[in-house]
Image (cartoon, rainbow, N blue to C red; front, side, top):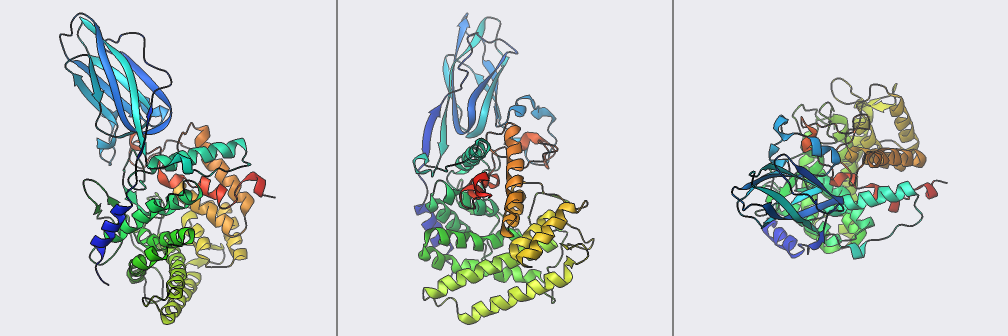
Length: 505
């Protein structure tokens, strides 16, 4: 394979988006009273925004004889206003907590905070002024930033009130994650992950249609692949383009499907021809994970495969299904490339992949399927999970009739490992749709994402457990991301898959 990584990054930079900036101010204005030690004020901007905040401060009373010392806190969700960062004991860096302690030596002054924040609420607390003067907040405003262009937003007619709200919140989630790249979350961790990109791209096709941003991200992943051409799970864009040192089995494979969906939307064959070898290489690397019986080797290495944010989830069966799903996408890509006269693929290559898919399907049926339960099982303990079975349905290991039986059995399985993220809930909804269970898919979508709205969501969360809405895998919900890319897909499901009440009959 010719090393074109630098060229790919240069191509990606040509598609760097123009940012859209809008100035917004809090709905509740500024306080009329001057503030003393211990006073605080909360500014509600009315919706979730991403951007830079400016505070104009002055004083009343005697001449300022000591610095004004304030704390400024930025919150995506209302509950964050009362969370105490000093108690944080989680394993993710507390540097992600959106708080600033600032001294204003001279008043009046304009504080233009240099960081970019994700927020709806801004809380200003006066930690210290002197007895001779009081602090006045004259104005607060934010320059919000996104690369999403609202004038290109496609409308969606005939929605119920709840569907409209879900659509609006999903679009805002996507919008606020559309920055220099498709970020996973504008609060944390503000980088490009391929699992998120795959779903963001689908939602983008249904809404903003900014397909050059998808193209940019695809080239960035190809350009930051390692020396073995393996696509990394995520990458950074600041201070320069750099791939992370994180690899996950399923995420590397999703480069294939993301490229295929991009072609289906745009018919941009030049990009497919450029990136075809990178896609092929992901499949070659993934083959090394199988044993001589074509069964996925199990692993207890944390993070070797993602599937869902569930530390108790065994990944073996789900990874086998993702491989089958991805190789089928690779076969589609190969046909497209062959039809355009490329010498990078032959009929023999396609036949070889078809044989491999058949072998992996047979192995999954023989070694990973429990006939008595009518469910796929995973790992030494034969774990049943929503993740493994949803992906097995999406991979088409059985036919639609059998797939519907699997999902029905899954609903009744009391010991099944449950889903944790909107990411996995999306794939479960898609699995239901794939075998004709449209009413169940609709009910699940409106219940799950609608539940976040009833919980006060302005944007959809990284994680959501209806039984414990602010559950966190990080040791504290103060670092949870309440605007997260992989949760934006209901707008795609409604607009592109017809998952609305009006389309159920």
